[in-house]
Picture 1 (cartoon, rainbow, N blue to C red):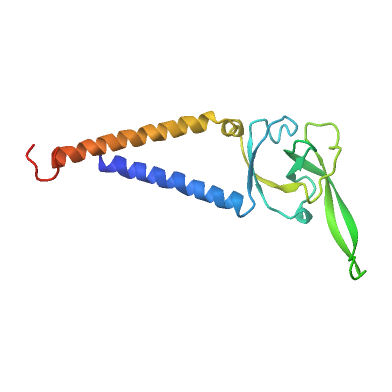
Picture 2: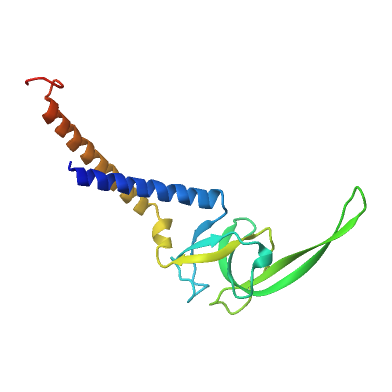
Length: 186
C-alpha cells in the first residue's frame, strides 16, 4: 500500500474518531442533543427527516418564536420540536416544612405550536419536560441516520478497507523479508 493511501486512511480514521469523541462529549457531558424530525407539524421550518441539534439553554432564556425540543407523552415519552407561541411566568410559593419559611421562585411554562398545526399544543411545557433550544438543522439527513442500514454499510465498508489494507501490508512485508523472516533466501 502506498504511503499516500496509508496517510489518507490514517487521517480518515482520525477524523472519524475525533467526530465521535466530540459528539460523545457534546451530547453526554455538555447537554447537546441530536434528534430526527418524524412528522410534518413544523413544515416549512422543519421537514420530516431533518436532523436537529439542540443546545442546553435555561427555560427562562427561551423567547417567543424560538423552536424548542421537549418531551411529551404519558405512557411512551416522545421528543417534539415546536415553536414557542406564548410564555407564561409562574410564581411558586414554596414553604419549607421544617422551618415554615416561605420563599417565592419564578419559572416559565411554554405554550408551543407546530407551524403547520391550527391549534396550540394541548399541554404546556414546563422545565421538567423541556430539553433545549433548536440550534442547527441538517436538512434531510435525520431519516437516513435514524435507520441502522447506513451504519451497517459504512461499518462493512470500513471493515473491508481495513481487511484490504492488512492483506496488502502483509504481502508487502512478506516480499521484503522473505517467507521465513528477515535475511532468509527463500
